[in-house]
Each structure stands twice: as structure tokens, then as C-alpha cells.
Image (tube, rainbow, N blue to C red; front, side, top):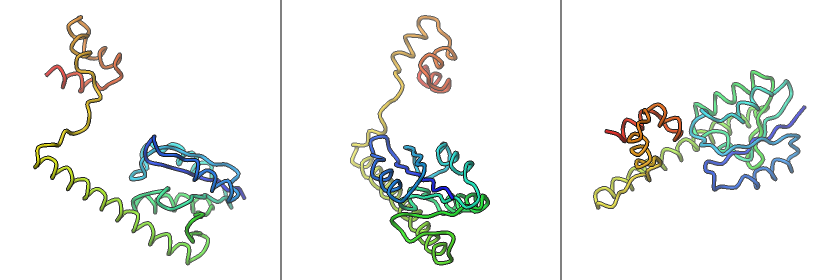
Length: 179
């Protein structure tokens, strides 16, 4: 039996060390981590590596279920993937162990609450944006594309595809800047 730890935070300015330390203290032979949103499984390559690696009798360890998934659908998909490999899921800070009936039930309850929390956060964010727009102070996200650089390259005779490639942006973004 191998205990494999998975640590995740949502943003690059958050720290993974507390989770890694807790997973190592729980006896994980290997800990993989990533800085990605938990609202979707898309782009979470470290999680996929673990799911592909799990073998019969292995244990996937997380500190809390919300580190694994923020939607009940994704959580259930992950649990099914773990189970199909003959492995189990455990959490260090919550009484979750999918090898027991009580652990499975508690997992489902926490998954519902994790999704609920995510939905509440989205609602609050949208309310804040609507309020800021009503007050005329909403600025939106800061621009990530240097429009002046796009225009300068276009003036030099460089085509949209080359501009996109050089600036590492989408071609549609180039066309949007050029109007």
C-alpha cells in the first residue's frame, strides 16, 4: 500500500507548505501539488498523474476534501476513478475514509458543502461587481495584452498570426486590438 498525497491551492500567491507537511506527517510516501482552481478538473495535471498512478490498495490522501474538488460532480468523478483503481481516499483533517460506509457518507456531505460555498462566493462576487458598476467604479480586470505592442508590430508589417505567436497571445486577441 502506497499513500500518495495531493495538495492544492487556487492562486500562485498561496502557500502549499502547510498541506505538504501535514500529508508527509500522515505517512504519505509521495506528495504531488499544484496551484490550480478546484472548481474544475480541467488543467489539473498533478491530480491526473496521481489518478493514473494509483494501484490496488493505495490511498489518495488530502488534507481536506475542498483541496480535491469544489463541485460535487467532480468529487464523485474523482472518487469513482480512485475506486476503479482499487484504491481509497482519506483526508487528514476530516473523518473521511472511502473504505468505510460512514467515511463515504461524510465525504458526500462535505462535497455538497464545498460546492455550496463556491456558489455563495460566486454570488457575492457578482453582487460586488454589480454594485461597483452601479457606482461607476468598476474597472474590470487589468489588461494582459500590450495593445501598443500589437499596433507597433502591425505598423511594421507583421501579420496577425506572427504577432500572436511573438506575444504569446491568441490570434483573436490581436484582431480585437486591431479593431
